[in-house]
Amino acid sequence: MNSDSKKVLVICGMKGAGKSFFASKLQERGIICFDTDRQILLDNPYFQSVRELYQRIGEKLFRQAELQALQSVFESIESSDEKHFCIAAGGGLAANPDGMELISSMKQKLSIRTAYLRQDKQILYQRATEKGLPAYLNHSDSQSQFFSITQERDLTYLNFCDFVIELKECRSSEETEDLLFSFF
Image (tube, rainbow, N blue to C red):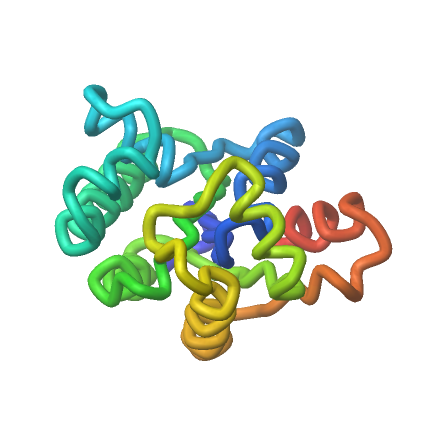
């Protein structure tokens, strides 16, 4: 890979960690940003939300749609003349080994770094459920189910990502934004 290679920052984390928020902040700084959840809806225009799609087609087909969205994003990046990109990955990336493998394999072509936005599980649960229960949770004991999923995905992200940003240790969202921007 030469110095003219494209730089791609993939922001990972649980639902509610702030991936889309920080991607939008990087976009304000001139970085070309993609959101895989948004791409899923572009690829599946008959659905109003990612939640609705997940409920209708189930986890297995949803993970395939998630992989297709990620592939579409990488195709857009490869065909672009721009040099700096950010991808806000869906919160369930850790449950999609094919998606994680795609990101790893794209490191052969692009300069990719992965950042894990690590947040307190209580804050994540509050954010994830403020618009209703996510489709992947059951109504009975959703909080402990969410905490179990969070713990499992946390280990996956810790092993997969190049660096971790502990959000509870950042003094401000600007500090986190600056850390993410420093990749470029």
